[in-house]
Image (cartoon, rainbow, N blue to C red; front, side, top):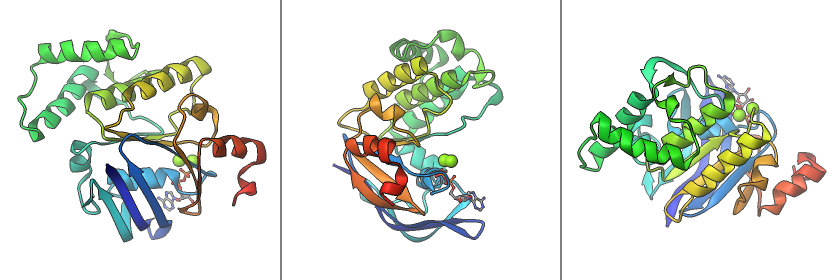
Length: 247
Ligand code: ADP
Ligand code: MG
Ligand code: MG
């Protein structure tokens, strides 16, 4: 099933054009990697898909399940199943992780006409998810991301992703700042969440993560658009020969 279709997308921030004619098509069940040099527009792409209000789409379309979402609010996009894991996850003081997750989960319930979960039923559900990703349940009572290590913040995002029934996950440099053990655990969690019913976009600068999560397609981004697409081998080729061998 066609999940995401991006046609000739142009987007700018503060009058600087960053995305310049980007095309991308993604079906359910696929894992895509987007690679490219620093500053080529990878994070901008992620934020524009998630509906970040600082960015203006000046041309082109974003279709999600064949519906144009150019003007849809970030919240509605999230409720439809678009999940963006940030390069730098934010800390939220004064809000416990459990409350934060339950609020998000119950918003999701609302739009699917299901009843909200009370705190205890929610804890039961979330404890199962937490065990599945090998996370300590003490994280639930702590404030969102406050004092979490890099690896713990990333795990927390994977937990959010698993609770929200994500259809399109965009992982922006999820591998940055992780040691090899954290990288392996998080990759295993991401692989476990991948299904025929969702798709994953992995944005990364390096081949490292792609040795654990094998993408169906690797796209090279340059100056705000995708200039080359290949299979998993393309990431290895890049590691050997560098971006300049392609652009
Ligand atoms: P990447 O994630 O690939 O490293 P980004 O999407 O973060 O790239 O940035 C793409 C380009 O957009 C960069 O050249 C950056 O300087 C520019 N950019 C990002 N934010 C702003 C801004 N607020 N105003 C002007 N230019 C910006
Ligand atoms: Mg960057
Ligand atoms: Mg970036």
